[in-house]
Image (cartoon, rainbow, N blue to C red; front, side):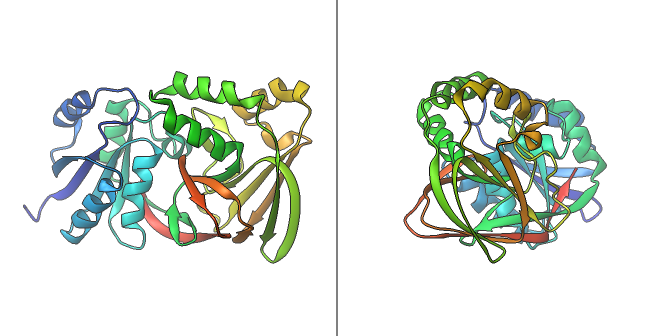
Length: 290
């Protein structure tokens, strides 16, 4: 490897989204600046991206680029937390919430141009019981949709909308016990989201005021609401107005305990736990090209 050139390692999840990954490889050949050398690896199993990113970091890559959705970004990004190696993103998932929040273009050519700038910012990450997440983690309807979507079989925006619509009106709010920066809270909520970034993906903004630079998480509690107001809630979600809802509660925090929630999600990926969750922000812990 030439010492005069930066080395990038692209990790492609061939199962994310519906976009053909061969087109992305072709775009790299055409659009990536000649100042870079690069390697491309396709993932073969869950957590494979993390293994590849760890190895790339040890081999002195300057950046590792996640080509996929928020799950792939999570797998790559968590291997780079606390290192000088930068995370890059070419969005090709179903929602791409992390990339959308950082205003990384959805079009492959434009996303490669962002990588060409190699403009690096240091952002916050977060963790649940020591496991990192980059964008959001959530309980209630958040987690329920994550499980249903994982089992649905088809990826993509319209599949996600179908799952969400099918489950929205039948889902029952649940009771939660939390300790937020030392203050105990009990609530009946439709969902609770712990947001480092502002949206789930597809411009559904659960935390419009969230920032990856402020050293805090937005704890977003959507409380029980009348079913007749469901269209209004959805409208506000997609128009950055959810924080104005009378049923929405926002608390900024550094550390949160959740009493035995059973199921939750991290960056859209469903998780289970029979013990309490400890969620915390990790300020300025990841370099990102954006």
